[in-house]
Length: 148
Image 1 (cartoon, rainbow, N blue to C red):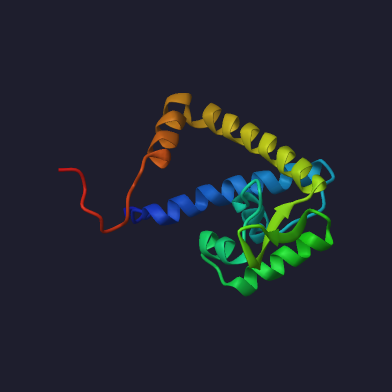
Image 2 (spheres, helix red, strand yellow; image 1 turned 30 degrees about the vertical axis):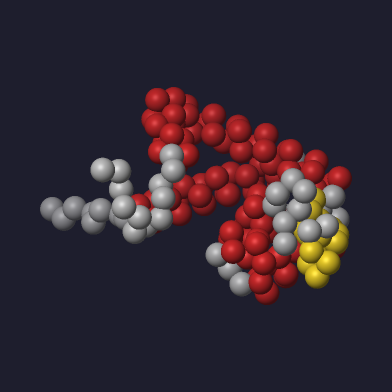
């Protein structure tokens, strides 16, 4: 009898993220929302309320500026995002949600809350609370000195 190799934590976290993405996309599709890609969904979630630069979005997402530009322009064409001058820098522009984008973001937020509740029903509220606490705890950098 062979046992399955232990999956590493990044793989498990990736699967968990896909579980939420799949659930969110299915919920939005059932509500009649226009289809979006996982990259567009991630970009939408990374936006600050007052807007975010393309460079900062690329850094947060761990992708190239070109990837972010493509996703931004598709969401601008669909009316979810807009670009506005950055008041802090005359050379940069901020990407922010439009009114339509803010409504879609709120619908997505409610859908994610429902998925989190469903996960709590499946794994137990205590396990869900522990998972949330572990993910919200400050981890520091991968090579920082741990607590003494």
